[in-house]
Amino acid sequence: MLRRRANHAIAVRFMERVRASKRLQIVRIEPPHEERAWVIFKRYADKDFGFVDCTSFAVMETFGIAEAFSFDHHFRQFGFQTLPLHALR
Image 1 (cartoon, rainbow, N blue to C red):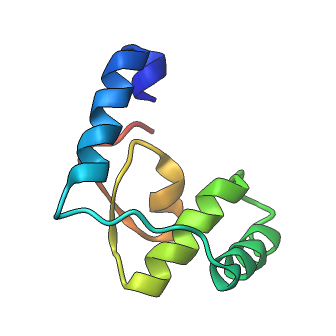
Image 2 (image 1 turned 180 degrees about the horizontal axis):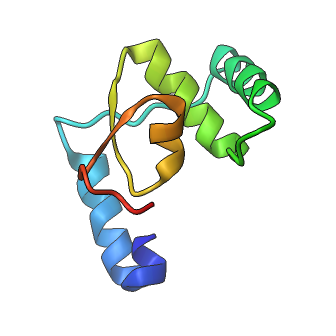
């Protein structure tokens, strides 16, 4: 999103800060997350969740995360809170 709305250099700087942060953790998808994501993806045919959304949901469930920093309304549809609170849609 940063690359699309700002530019590549800003997106790179942001990700470098995320990667260097001691407060944030990058979680890579493991087979159990992928399997749970597949279950979510199949179950919610009435929603337009992408598979990447579903992998995020699965990881958030695993770690007991209830809030996402996201402008994507799919997180709210699945039952998570989003920050900022006035996310789009």
